[in-house]
Image (cartoon, rainbow, N blue to C red; front, top):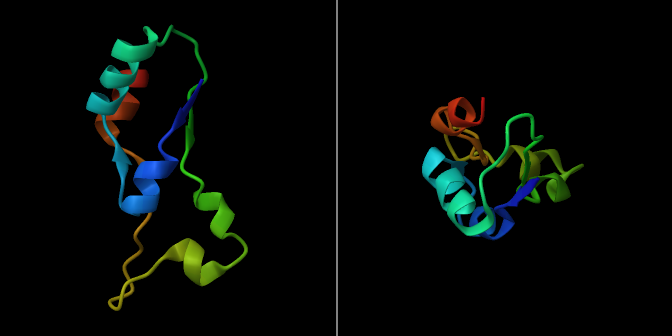
Length: 77
């Protein structure tokens, strides 16, 4: 399955998928079955090959990127 959080990432580049997001998805779409490949769509790849846009660093050099939260990964595993 593909979890599309591209709208959330467009509004918040630090968006992190949590277990709560996965449980909400399951409530709307059904349980994610064992062995299912789960992909995350953020559209962040559209920033490539612009390295500055892709890394999205603030004035202190810290990157602001979307991704998976540890609780979400543990839930899926």
